[in-house]
Amino acid sequence: MNYRAEILDTKNPLFFKVQIEIDAPATKIFDFLIQPKNHRLMDGSGMLRGEFKGPEKLYLGAKFGMKMRYGIPYVITNQVVEFKENSAIAWRHLMHNVWRYELASISDHKTLVIESWDGTTARSKWWVSDSGKWVPKAMAKTLVKLKEIVEK
Image (cartoon, rainbow, N blue to C red; front, side, top):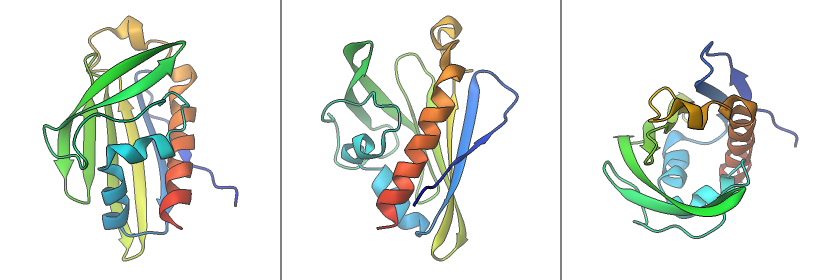
């Protein structure tokens, strides 16, 4: 199938939102998202390169690391800053931009998944200023991959 995620217009060049409907219950999707080892499977940016460092399942305050590549290889450590069971999870790294997944049940077996990236909280606006060129598209690819995986 050829699925598409919808990129929403937030009218803010440092805040992006993408959504997709997934034919799976929120509990199944949330369980997938809270396992850092799964993030590489759904990565639409192509930046995640290596195994994670951290807990098997995330929780509020949990720290986890990823091997990344954006031009050069590096390692990033994230911390979970929001955790609402089967509803929302968000994390940020040293630069303080935030990735958030929100899950809204449409029915027992259908969920609206919204991924957002908030660069308004970043410590360096210069560092994230070109994010609009690629982040929303990468997020859309991520949600399509997530849909394909959890609907199996």
